[in-house]
Length: 127
Image (cartoon, rainbow, N blue to C red; front, side, top):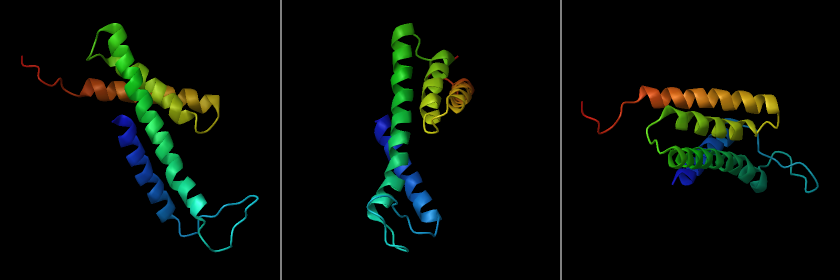
C-alpha cells in the first residue's frame, strides 16, 4: 500500500516537473534527439524516476517501522519513527550519491518523523 502511494505521489511530482519547464524534454546520447521536440523516452524517465524514488522511500519507512515494532514489541514509540525516518532519509540522500548528503538527510528525516510522531495524539486512548 505504501509503495503504491509513494509511486502515485512520485508520478504526480514528475509530471509537475515535466509540465513546469517550457523546454522540450529531450534525450542525449547515441540515439540523439530532434531539436525542439519532446522525446517520449526522456519524458518517461522524467516522470517515472521520481515515482521509483518516492515508492522506495515510502516502502523503506514502512518496512523499517514495522520491523522495529515487531522487534521491540512497542507499537506507539518515537524510536520506531526515528529509525524508520533515518532509513528513509538515507534512501532520499542516495539520489545525490554523496555520503555527506545521505547522512544529513537521514538525520533530518529521522528528527522530522520523530517530531511528527510525538506531536500527534494517540488514537483511541481515553483518559
